[in-house]
View 1 (cartoon, rainbow, N blue to C red):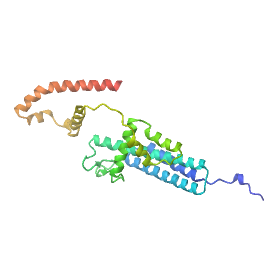
View 2 (view 1 turned 120 degrees about the vertical axis):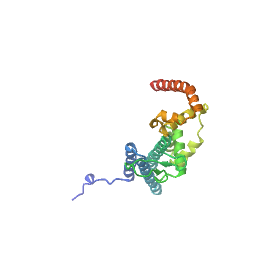
View 3 (view 1 turned 180 degrees about the vertical axis):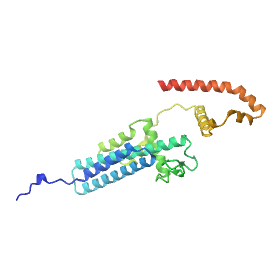
View 4 (view 1 turned 90 degrees about the vertical axis):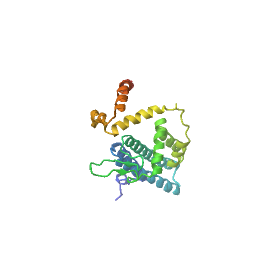
Length: 248
């Protein structure tokens, strides 16, 4: 009896496996809600990247067609871009946590809340992020903020040129890019932003003004009387300007 080979299932090849790994990394990043989940997506992207790299090595050893190698490079590029996206997102969330006062500047303590109010905040190192990795993640994030799509375009250009897309090449492109000419930021903008942050961090809303006034001497109280109307008027104008900017 002749075997009907057309009905036999075709086992998935390396490309099918790599595609699945890339899709899993992409799906994980899309649904990630915590920094730990973002790092998990990053690790999945690393696995997909390594799988594609291994497939390329095998394909070259078997003298496979350039089409097969190029396809593997495309998967490798997708995995690399996902890894970079995850790293940039982690860096952005880390920076935001710093701004909220959840990260101590000295020891880099970061509160990745997991539902246990008594749990000690974790550090970036506890989650597997080294100092140099954090620095490079911030560089990626800054480059992407200055030129949206920069990272993906850099990866795609490598693939289009028939090159192996690597993170080292991405970082080289990031570091060698021409920095845009930006006007120097007024230091007073940073100063007032920091003072508003301090007002929140010191939990001033929980302190009765009368209690603070009671701790002031006569000279301090007199100065407050003179300065408060000016400060209040300035902050009201600032609030108005911020509102108009948001509406635009």
